[in-house]
Length: 176
Image 1 (cartoon, rainbow, N blue to C red):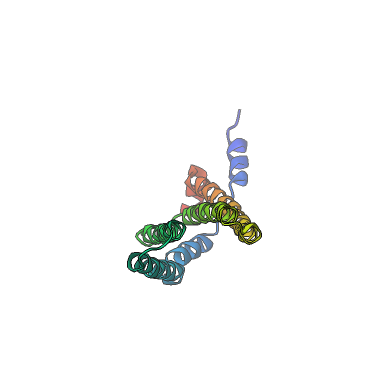
Image 2: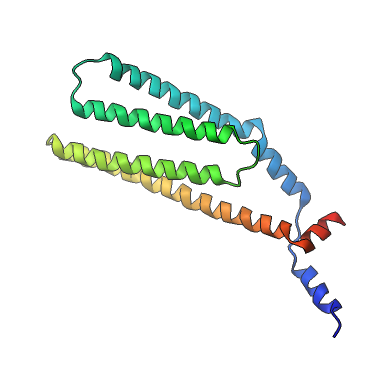
């Protein structure tokens, strides 16, 4: 048996990789313009935590419901700050991982908002307003879920590309 035809067919099955496209992708992921939105999000979230935290700290006699809401807002803000620090301290491409994590955070925060809006509306006998707020939270959750699904697909595509680049035949093709 001649192994040449099998080797030739495996070369044809190897996906062709555009090296310039991969380099452009890496450059875009690591560029300042890719990191700037995370800097702005971190500053906004930190500002929110400072404003809400200072209101919470300086106002005396707040109802328990308001204190719980302020604590939740501070927790959400600190969650986004921690996420941004995680993204900004990485010196390598995250393979869409940051999008998966951010969409999961958004889904969690939207779910908490949706449930708490309905509960507070029911508790204070303002059910229509609570349900309206919960409906808005449901729409935000659906948007976060759609972003999560898109990020998962992008992550899987990038992992497939990485596996194809790690194959010996592809490495030999790129080296040639």
